Image (cartoon, rainbow, N blue to C red; front, side, top):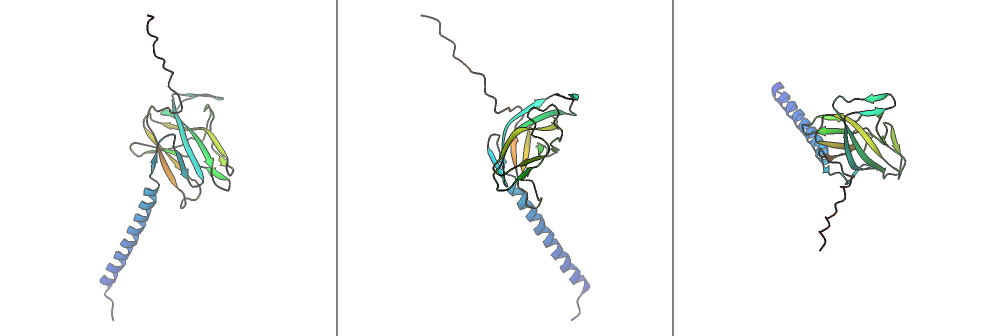
Length: 184
């Protein structure tokens, strides 16, 4: 039975479109699974790594061993604690922050002048944890930190942490005492 070329071509195109749609939807499922948003102070597990974002601090400049360090925008230091809950050593990847418009900014790999800098090459042994500051050069504003399990891109899991502008959690408010009433 002869095959009509146009019918054959239509079927191939329809099959290719169906396959592309399936791949797109699979990508959307991966994205939606990783789009859970946490608040600062919450534990966030991504793979074997568990993150807790404790504080954000903004700086106009940093004083390093080589002198004054001036950002292109403004420095954002994000204080985190990272624990390896796995059975093997794990690398902690450089992270990114995402602004309200969806633009990503990667973590800086130089920590001159950053107090308690977490470092650029970070490996945690099984059960170990580390705390420190990550550094970003970003316009002042509200961001989400994207935390990651690191490793193979196909198996990577991520989550987002809200970091509202002006929030400096981890700092306690000054003590407030009630005024003493005048003597009787």
